[in-house]
Length: 181
Ligand code: S6P
Ligand code: ZN
Image (cartoon, rainbow, N blue to C red; front, side):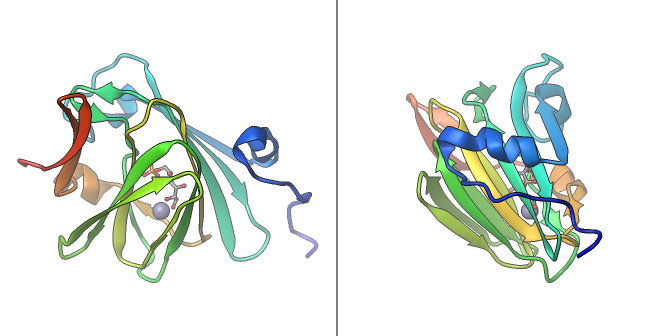
């Protein structure tokens, strides 16, 4: 264990995510301009869409805490880029600490699923399924993800082909509609 990062026990709940942030070793910031090619109408506005704080675990898994702002870009609710894992055997566990959203899952063959993800809920993402989380609520959507260190992220396939569905506002509510592209 000589090379392991020194981690202290911490409790993880929405009231004390600062403990996770303090222990994190990597911080990814995605603003609207980083999402050009993902949202149909993304522009260079500087608007923050989400932060990801990552903790490198000492053994075989890493953890990521995603904090997504509420809002929309055009008609689309705030969402992550979404990715396939590069490793064909890498699965992932998601737990929602706060907020209200969805996860979209898509297999390499194009099969699409969606599931609600809200406080106290979790989702298992099996190997080979691309995943994107979407904030359809009015507050921050906060998610913990646990994934293998060697998972890797393939964003290119999603940027090129997109997901088969989009989450948009229709009459003041969210709707999951076919992606015309
Ligand atoms: C990593 C895991 C999450 C995402 C995060 C941001 O495998 O799925 O930590 O990285 O939710 O999403 P994205 O698609 O921009 O990496
Ligand atoms: Zn992932």
